[in-house]
Length: 635
Image (cartoon, rainbow, N blue to C red; front, side, top):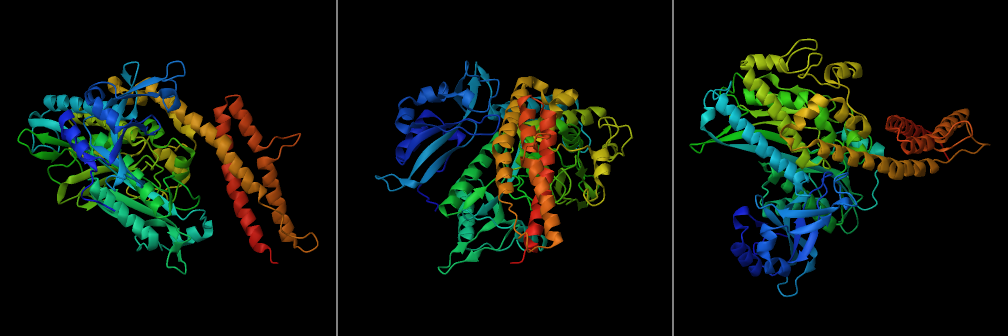
């Protein structure tokens, strides 16, 4: 699928009039230019113009506003309104531009696939940048400036005694994402029992792929290589069932979970690369007759899909050397430097207000429940000792370190999912990390004192972390604590989008951390939350309730009144009662469906949130009861 004669990437060094004209003239198969901005929900725009127009006025496109869009039609809720909807697009020349090829449209002159040059842009509304890309870009600029100032004031930092802060030339923000997804043949819907059994028996994880799944995965890895993303692996994840092979040797009834990983990058480029990787995966698997889902929890009761996000901070010294600021001078005796400890503490202390940007959909919160290694608690694990790195997969923020490779030291945030807005997530991570870094560096504490702070027990006073919480556990947080203990020690996790968005008003002092520098502005946070709540309400009323209703209507009475057992009748009586509770209005009592609609109509989001949870609980019981009832019917 790769073609060495085709163009895949245009680097920042090539993004000038002379070089662009030369490159694009030499590649006539590139027929279009698409201007790509990213709204607050993480949606990327696709404003396509002919390449001839771009070349004709290339200076105007590069130096002015490249295009306009209707901001009221994308997720900039309350910012770009119907009476003030114009949003201009300003080209970003600091990142790679990629060629998006149409695998089904070929240029008659060259015989090559028709390509579109995708140019990342910032969105500008009333002369203010109002998009996810600019928030991340400007946040990292601000954090770098603040860190350089901090190192000038405190040139000697605990754990970094081998360098002087005065010799730091530049701060480097290293980031990486992993992408998990479900793939299936069209209309395939494997039973939950089969998926759950296969997972419990560990039949899938890292198993050999077969047929068109193998072909698609191999082609995906090849294309990631072509675009310079540096693929590191592609493999089966723990979810799925074994596919079948038809008489022609083709795979049928495919339903399995996969993961692809690629090399880390820096800041905004990391998030741009993740968008590109998703496009590549979707297109290549579609060409192989397979559907891809990036939902966090597409199949209830089995493993969901995460997008673990790794963050680190390095420094380029004036002598050209690059130093990992998380790694302590002595990797054998210490876990982290003061910068590393501060980053971890900043993430954990402020996570309640980071979480809205991570989990803003019903689907994402369905994943974040006990089981299947989903991170529920605001807690980290460092390891039993610096020489024995932790691989505790039940915590939120993991410390990744290799004692023989200090540059590998980083923090893995395990809560993001494939639909998390990576731009806003990384911005929120780093601005929160800055808060903790400043506290640790300015405290003058030793590394042992910082480790004690992170390891403190609930009720103990700390110099930065909250008194009544714990933040570190080397235990399995699902097996070794009950639900009440987890809530007391690590905080009660939100169960609905509404509960998650309420953190924005419930933790004003933590929102003040996110708005430091006035980049992730309060109005941007409010816009994000309003957009998330609109999508929550719309999905619940227009998708989930109709889906519940359809499932309930398919649950028919199966036994004959003249030929049944009392057990059959008793089971059906319970099923009928739950069906009515969910969907049937009576004079004395409206159904849960109606009560939910009425709650939203009067703006009572608390009630709607509680009703969502009640419906989900009853629906789970109803499915289990009906499944048992079906299996007891013998024709």
